[in-house]
Image: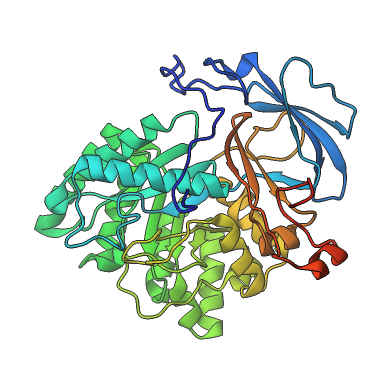
Length: 435
């Protein structure tokens, strides 16, 4: 079975949506649909980042209890042995493009028929879920010849994925000013009525960037929804204007990928970062590569250390997933964290926070800690420390709303090697002796 294709977990329960709008939750090993309130799951012997080894009991979609290893009974629920695994708050994906994902190898023009877009968006979300992201924000282009069709397809994918992952859609118009912009603005209003929960776009590509910002921020204020904009960030005057206009807007403004900030003189970039911080504007960087929404001048990641030093809240996303923006994009948040640690100058724990805690905050999601009372959005990775799992994060167990929704198991073997046996080198995912 190809490791590039998502596979449904063998224990998943399927059923009709429940009255609260979420799909039914099933405990691992159970056959029928059950609600999260009626099932518990014990994660036994998990290692935490502070070095403790604990049992974690989940129920009702939340963490019910955390105790010393062996102290919590499994009761009637399921049990997962996490000995040798590091348990972390699950990542979230703040910047994806589900409508264009997986199109790099397409022969001829990319199809935007609704069923094709829905298939791509669903597969992309499942790939990202397998990597650990239990929430995904997908930027979807609206307008031009395709109208609102791609957005409706992504919203349909969102409905079909309930119970597995939380998918939200960002409506991304091309133009919002002038004669053509009037149609774009009307379509953006329709997109919000359809179910898009975030307003996006790229002011850099509009003939009137300031007018574009005014339209977006006014509409966001009317609907009380967040704003998430594409910008290269290479124009400090434009960034300063954006910060002034966005200050005080709730629930907030995010911009990205802002690679152009890295090409500015240090003093200019520092002043721009200070203005963004004072305005509360968040930045989402893309360490794995850019996306096709911008006419790029160079592939540079935003200056994360400079932004963080100024007080800007910085999250990390994946960007393009095997489309024109990045034909080899993986959509893996742990790779984004690895790159921030290996090339961006962040400590391993800071890099992981950028794809988990900081990403969730940027998406307006509740905080997750491995403590009682917090949401059961968790990722278990085979390993002992953050640095080691960012280096070799192959085997993963993903938990969404208190149940296991995805597993990835890796086995490393060395053929006919007495040296490997003598050194007791790790063989991931396998405890019994090999042949």
